[in-house]
Amino acid sequence: MKHLILTMLILAHCPAILGQARLLQTDSQWHPYYVELNEQEGVVYPVTTFYDKGASGYYMQKKDTLQKQPDNSYAGRNSKIVREEGKLYLLYKSGKTKKYLLNTVTDTLLANEKMNNAYYQRYYAAMSTEVNETYPLGHHSFRNAFYTWTVVPEKQMNHRQFELWADKRIKEVKDSISASHDQHTRLTNYITQNIRSITYATLKDSMAQLSTADGIYFVTTIDTIAMKQPEYFFRLAEDLPNTRSAIFSTGIYSRRVYAAVKDVKGHDEVKKEFLKERKYNRRMTFTALGIVTFTAGLITWALIALT
Image (cartoon, rainbow, N blue to C red):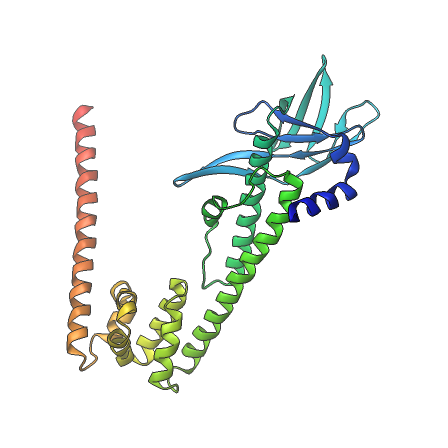
């Protein structure tokens, strides 16, 4: 019912485009641009194919609105549609102008799915960038778009209807992420600014809440604790066993944290565990570096021997 209402609203505001438009597609595998064209105007949807680590999808560049010209061509900011020998061609400028043959879309559902995926990927990535710029201590990966796309309902709905749905959904995700970052930012600022005066009980409760945050919030806070209240480093490791590995990691990979906590008295059992884990991680790091160095040397020797 919601989708029906949205469709009716779109039809009411865009009768010319949806009532008489032809949906065309370029013949390029890597740039399956779509064009919605009627007698007076059109819209170019510059969809491109891209690959990422373990995933692939589509990405939509900025749409281009076209107006019909006196010579019966259509022109927009970055694109132009011309007719040559009875065929339509899209001239699209991205760095340099490329020419694509346009064909009528025969599978509208598949076309909608590609356009919808491209729109979702673009604006989810834009949302991720905005969130990360607003909250530098956090990180929300644009790759979450790949995973959340798999649960998007009705991927083949009309692309104009989908844009409304996607805008609303991505805003909901952004609002949820922002609320979480706001809470973690307040906690981090409170702890780092008051570490010398707050009680240990308050600190422990706050750190338990931060344990679910993006790692940098937790790391930043542990770093401050180690510098200003080094004993609390081990007390927290004792009292928060579920986050002990995260606490240790800060001391393992940060020389300044290790230097601050290594001479803390007491807490013998947990301190022994920390030193053991640090020694193991350093040994593994040196071993990995040794393997890489040996392999590089072996390859170099082989290349020299073969020349």
